[in-house]
Image (cartoon, rainbow, N blue to C red):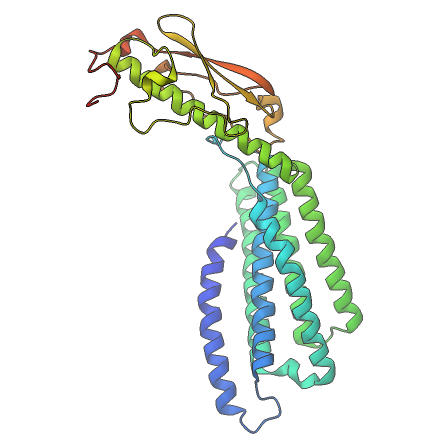
Length: 346
């Protein structure tokens, strides 16, 4: 929604403003009681960096959950998982840091109220207001554009718009109150509670949609298994092209190069390989979860594309438990055998 594009620009503006504020405070406030010191500098810088990191991670988390819960029908996704591990880890670490820094700033304002008007605080506050205003305006413009252009406003799209609207409005409202000097200890505490509820609620929603860390691990095992079997299927087609026959076992292909993993990464047992006829075979494995189409919208799993040309395995969807994929190599693929191993140059 434009937030990712704004962040690099904000970082550049942020660095320039910091340099300007430091120079300005050291040159113009040498005899002032509002002189910038190291503590004020790092508390203000730290709180803003923590805020931007939290917002970015929160939006990333919510967008990932929304994309999984309400996938776009007209978009094609290759085999892969929608992971929330990094944004969740970032939120868990940075949110307490942000709360601590804001609490320290509040204590310093109580002791020395004039610190709320020092240059670095005002500059960073106005910068944050500016960025929040840009995101808010861009969010509303996007909705209006889609409406006027007659494009479909799906549930996923509207939820993303709502996420940016709520977050940017909250940030804008908080820092506008701060610059006006209307924030009290009670109102700051309410803001902290609201922020905590949003963060914890978002993490809980993410796990409810995408599963617990253990569930995520099981899906990653299944993804790796399908990836291994895809590579094996490709090697079987390559072997057939070079020799005109299917190999009797994985060991026959062991003299090749860039060979796939023939063992299940979870059980460490070899994948099952069966020859059904001269040009058909089966590849089997044990799967933890199902990837069927009726479940895929609520799980972090995407169906892999079919092997081009009608060869190999055409459908990589699978149920939970032991399952075999049926593969086929076309008679048109037969080539002149190059060597006994089936791989040129060996």
